[in-house]
Length: 170
Image (cartoon, rainbow, N blue to C red):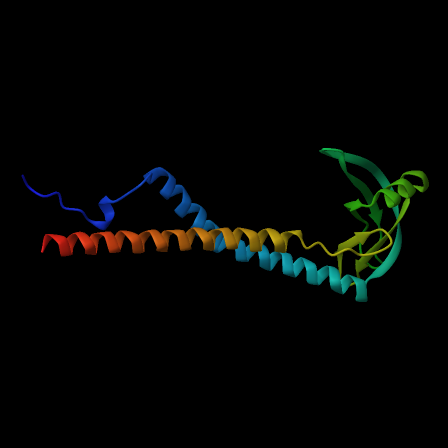
């Protein structure tokens, strides 16, 4: 009886799952930092909005409530604001319930925008920087790192097993 030759590539457990995990790992290692960087850029823009922003009164065009499930709601206001020296901008804002109620009755809402870049704006009394993209990017990157560590650990175990078998054959 001939011995079966075992190579590192022949020791596979659930090859379809491993292939999917590798794709997720590579996408996470590349996409996670990109999403994180975009979140940091957006966060910094909103921070500069608090210091350099100009506040104007905007006309409310539409209001809506989005039910996100389990009793949670997102309040949206579509408003037109006119930065000096620029055309009228129309943008949809997510606001707090109090701001939504006031905008619905008065049909006005205050909008803060960057004079150098009027598309960067926020509605309501205060500017709230969004940290969600940074958290998502960091989370995706950490999951990808954990998958990579799993593969390294598994490869080391396979190497140990193969070295042990090679020593037993000698």
